[in-house]
Image 1 (cartoon, helix red, strand yellow):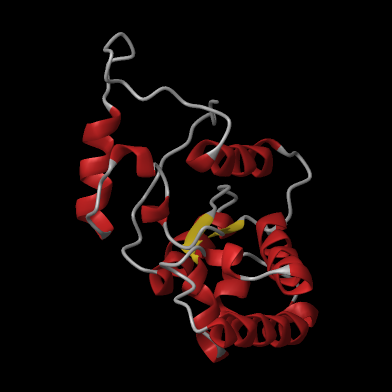
Image 2 (cartoon, helix red, strand yellow):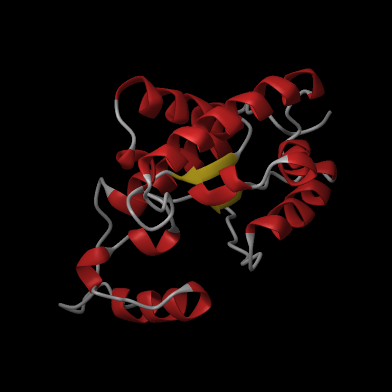
Length: 181
């Protein structure tokens, strides 16, 4: 799966994603934000700035803030860590559906949430236990760079690959939402 002219930038944390993608989009450059599920913990101005960076219509901010709060409360009620214990999979039934509906809405505007919890929940078969930048560097090393090597990790249809597939759909959609005119 190829995303033409794609460059990944590490924003370091969820609060700085918006600082990177908003000005790029204002220049007409399609840019997505990828954040861990704990973006739900950021209410108030942080949440609003995240929505603004995706150019979600302002009229929807309040309803999305209310849904964010309600979904966060459902996560909190489980007593589990939404980021490290499985993301939306710790919810069930209509609660899980509501969380996915919220994340679908954000994805429509190029704001992608790691529904499994965090980036580090991907590629578990490589047995990398680090976190943050260290995890990323180590996981790339374990994936390999030579497609002819027996240790090279080939893309599949699940895990991080399906997530990237959703990003590709947004990038290649000529009617994508979230780019100001």
